[in-house]
Amino acid sequence: MVRSVVLLTAACLLAGGCASFPDEPAPTSWSAQPQLTPQAGPRPELPGEYRPTPGDQGKGQPPQSVPPPQGCKDFNPAVIGTCLNTVTGVAPIGADAQGGVAAYATERGGRVVKVTKDVDPVVIAQIDVDTSSDGGLTGLALSATFAEDQLAYVYVTTATDNRVLRIAPGDSPKPILTGIPKGPSGNRGVLASDRKGAILVATGDAGNPALAADPNSLAGKVLRIDGSGKPAQGNPTGGSPVVSSGLRLPGGLCVSADAQKIWVTDWAANFDAVYRVTPGKLGDAAWTWPDRPGVMGCASLSDVLWVATAKTPGTQNLPMNAAGAFTGKPTVSGEDGSGFGRIGPMEQLNDASALVGTVNKVGGQPVSSDDRVAIIVRDGQVPGKD
Image (cartoon, rainbow, N blue to C red; front, side, top):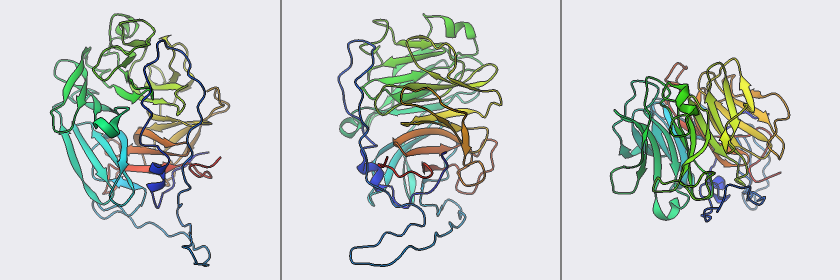
């Protein structure tokens, strides 16, 4: 079972290599990669845990309660960004000056900000977007070589279309993939790194299911592009960015640490669903939620698919075997007030933790510091430990 608990320090998460990915050459064909073992990170200090300094023989101390927020000041040590407005994307970018996690976050209204604990958000870019439907600024991913090039990618709705923009330091955002159909609904799109150097793009159907089935349309698809917006090498069809088709309103994309499993969540016509991404049509859902909790971001851990929900508090936690088959029904964590409420984006840090952004200002029960960017960890497990 997974539930949200706080971290008193996030520095160890970065030490585990969670904020950067190897810059691998593009594959020559769409095929499975050799099994990799995720790098283990050092053990973090958990809430209420006493860790003696050298020579200190003291014993454990009882957990300390967390005071409620005061305005934008949040005393929860797991929170690294506050007073945002409908967080739609999160991505760790490295360590802050104190050794904690620094991250980029996007807001649906068009801002890209850098967040670090106890520091006001720093605006990286302000993009003119159309939020009149379900679109806006809805997706964020980093370059596989972000440490060197500082490039970020965002998915936005404009007055005429949906598109992917590239953001470089000191430059205005540049469109690299345009002409994704826009409609009265189905405009939300999300991004993810494929952990091999390419960018995955999940697009909505623009309110027209026929477009999702049309191989010549970019709507309702999972796309795979390079950093210039061109079809990535090794795609199922040469010269085409399309990998899979059949989406309606995607909420999240996630890739396992070994790049073997790709998942996309979707608000289908009659249920919420998660699909295993394979070339061609998406086919049957790997899991469905008839009660429609609003599935959004996800993290593909070694034995759990962790799914955020925007209509109900907490996360859905699907037990999973090494092959990616679900082995039981999902459990829910963080729904009882122990978490951060309604969650939109989620980005895996390592096999026991994730960076998330809240969407409590849209139909939830926001506190004064919402919306927030925070770190959640798995109950009963320690990052970097089996």
